[in-house]
Length: 381
View (cartoon, rainbow, N blue to C red):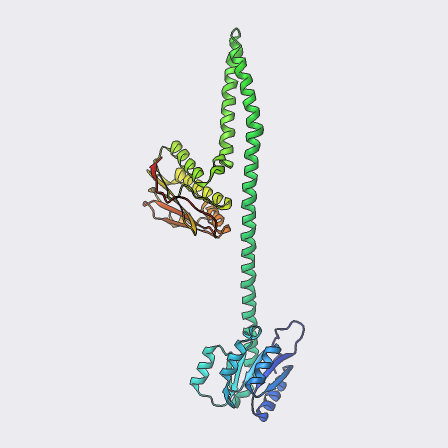
């Protein structure tokens, strides 16, 4: 004897089987065979397609066992009827028939039937049934695992989006505090020290120390402004075009590299979330160029149509090797790709060693307003 095959029901170990058979003797033989094998089951019996369809539409079965040739239809018709029931599509369907021929058996298996057993070898049925139930359970577990994985990915994407949004909000808050508190205080102190320097004509030492303090304050002011700009540049409030253009100008001034700036739609109106993603992509790409690319020229292109916002940053530098891109700590580019995914977009990186690198981010506008004159101004920063 073999142990009872597992049921897909967690509350019962009794199998629910549906037997499609027009011969009473064969049905009794099936019952005897399963009972002898020690399989605990309830067997529902029908001999016509209409009743079969009713059964599978109103009840849940662990498996279907069917003869091939029946009055007016075949087991393949029953299989198609079973597939019309969403809750029953994964139910194992086993043929138990006479000599149906190899061609018919192969066709049945190709359509998705679990297995077939000749009536002359019905003693094999318990083993075939157990295997079919095990495979069905494996498929269900795999489908559930994929469903759970997809749900986990969705949760991860939502969490990432929330974290990115929180980071941007925190950066904006810090930038405002630096501007309002630290920057304001330093400016006030700078005015006081300037007055001291102007009015300390008879005290050379005081004037000297005052001048040194003034220079330090000027340095602190510059640092606070630089930190504020890196956190969230105020120019971003003027729109994406102005922000990216400012970024390219600032990059060119710092690195002395010529930057070709192309904007196909200077009046574009882009949702705030997409502006941040595009700006941070340009910022990270230009930072990587200054650190690693050894480039002689850079191109930044921004375009917007009815469907997509596209930003491309391209250089003629040394390129990025496949090994460098796959490094476990290569978080910069991965972070850009994840940023794009949070708003439904994607990041494309094209690079060959010695042939430069192109980074393109494409962001769906999803019906957002992106209007403006179709201009194509080109300039070198």
